[in-house]
Length: 184
Image 1 (cartoon, rainbow, N blue to C red):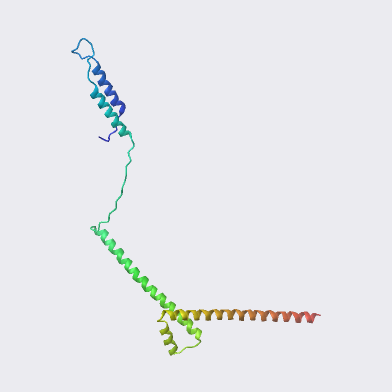
Image 2: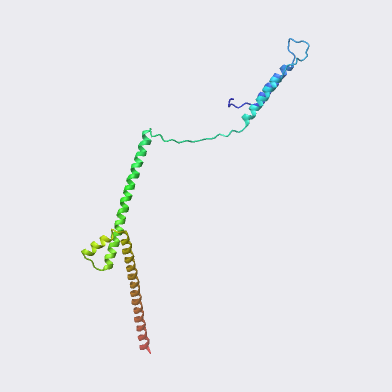
């Protein structure tokens, strides 16, 4: 079956012309009596053509499937995959090193805060502190001690600020009382 468009009306006209010619008496038959011809073959062909025409007129569903393949035989694809893999490995190594540095800075900060909490230190205390930082549980204990100390220092600073503010207010009230007393 071809995919060219068939005009139904022209096909029907052609069949009608064929039927008319078959209905006319042939030239060699002068009696002008129609010759009966078996038209079953023509009728079956006509039916088949009509079926084909109906099938052609039906909308067809076209299904598109896209498939993408990566062929490592191509040098560009293979080279880009290798370069991307190397970049990912390099960045992973860099991130790992940064995490180590950040953890070391965090530990050093905690050590500084612990020494500041102690008020003074010597060589023996620093070695003891370094040994404590080799054990993860000791680090947690030191962190809790430092955080508790810092909370206490903060509360004490707030109390001192409040006391200073209260004493300033008391002094101001005393001065106001003296000025009122001197007026009366």
